[in-house]
Length: 256
Image 1 (cartoon, rainbow, N blue to C red):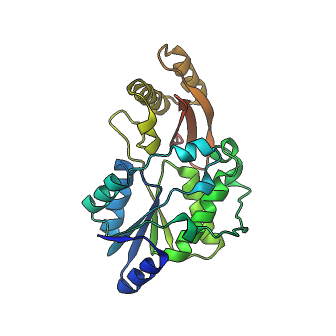
Image 2 (tube, rainbow, N blue to C red):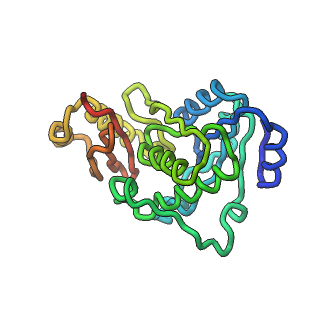
C-alpha cells in the first residue's frame, strides 16, 4: 500500500496507475466499519482504490469540534491495508489551502436545511474540499456513505454542475446490531451514552412518523436526547440528535 504525503507524490503515483479504473473514498480519518464498507465496494468495482485522510478545518463551524476530532492514523492505515486499499493520500493543510484562499462555494438549495441549517458554513467547506480533491484525483468513481445523505446529494450536484466526470456511488449505511450507524463521533460517547444512542436508533427505525417517534422518546425514562431535526428530503426521512453533546445523524427510506 502506497502512502502519499504530497501532491507531487500523488501526481507521480497517478502516472503509474494511468489506465486503471480508480475508486476514491475521501475521509477525515478515525476510520471504522462504515468506511470499511466503502473500501470493500470500491475494491470490488475498480482496479485501484485510493483513500484520502484530511481533517478539513473549513467544514467545522465549531473550533472545539475540529480540535477534538479523533486522530487515529496508525489504526486508519491498518484498516485501509486490511481491506485492500492500494494507496492513501495524506496531504498537509498548506498544500490543500493556499495562504490567500479567497474563492468559496455555496449551495442555496440542499444546504439550506437540516445539517446546513444546524451548522452554518459546514457544507461550504465540504463543497470546497470535494472540488479540490475531485479535480486532483480525477477518479472514475467516488464512494459516499448514505448516512451523510445531504453530503452525498451535494456531491452529485457538484459533479453535475462543474462537469466532473467522476461517478458518485452512494453506499448503504453500515450499522451495528442495534441499527445505530457507525460514526467517528460515536467514540466520544460514554458506554451509557452509546446505549442511549442505540435506543434512539431503534425508536427511529421502528416508528412510522415523527409523532410516534417523539412519543417513544418521551416515554423512555433513561434516554436524554436533544432532537435537532426530523424531516423529509427526497426519498429519505432525516433525523439528528445530541447525546452527551455528540451529534448523531441517521436517515431511513420514506414509507411507500
